[in-house]
Image 1 (cartoon, helix red, strand yellow):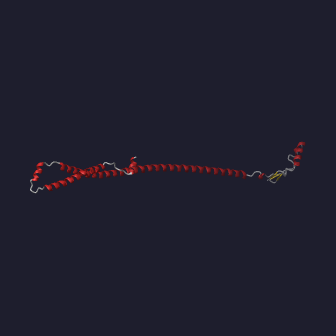
Image 2 (tube, helix red, strand yellow):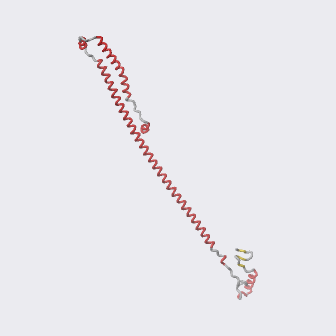
Image 3 (cartoon, helix red, strand yellow):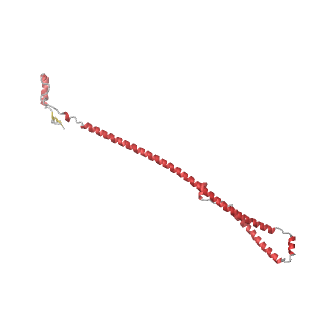
Length: 216
């Protein structure tokens, strides 16, 4: 350790100022040819091991190396995190695209299913309406035919011929004709009802909400 006030460094004692003054005076008077060293320097053997501590540079180099290692490690860590984040972002984008495509496919599939369901419903309704229309129209045709047969003129000669039959009874014939007239009148009153039921077959066909959504 340096002790400049006491003239010593790391245990080495410096020559006193008196020795330096005598040495300088001797050099000035020309007597330095005999003695070139100041008095007392012949026994002065400095130890320079204390001045050169090689551990200090190696310690500094070690610190710099460690700092570089830490910096390199941090750089690799940051790069790794960036790569992981980039891969995660790419994965999320792929998942989003796949989910969007899957949703579109499901929506198209649901639309086709609803369309087929709507077609089946319409086909069933049309089939039922066709059957009902055929029945109603057949009944209407029979009713019109019955009314037409009643209104058709049978001819006076035929009626006169019936009066000549021994079993002919005017009262019986009148009662029979009255029953026929009542039955025909009932048929005539049924015609508007039958026609109304036929016109009901032309009403719009209701469809399911799924089919309406597909239509939109």
